Length: 110
Image 1 (cartoon, rainbow, N blue to C red):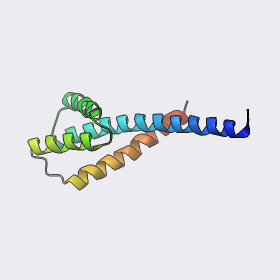
Image 2 (cartoon, rainbow, N blue to C red):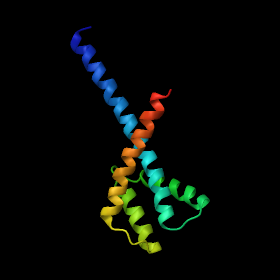
Image 3 (cartoon, rainbow, N blue to C red):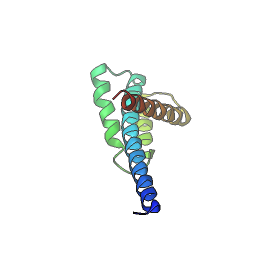
Image 4 (cartoon, rainbow, N blue to C red):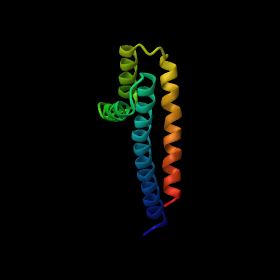
């Protein structure tokens, strides 16, 4: 084995781990986003949990975050929630950071 092969394998492993963490963080962010959105729409705790799962599932429609954004936007419009696109997107970004922090803390405590 050459040093180059070892470095290549190391980079590939790190990339795979980073992608796995990002996938987990996005799924967690979507759940947190769903709970936040449910609160904005005045849902009960049980309804909020169910709604959060629909937000997680919405992310499977296409790559990227637009499918999740469109779902939240449409649901807010249907429920008369007056938040701007910018406010929704900003919350999505903030919750992604929160989700990543939670996952890192859980990994560190293992």
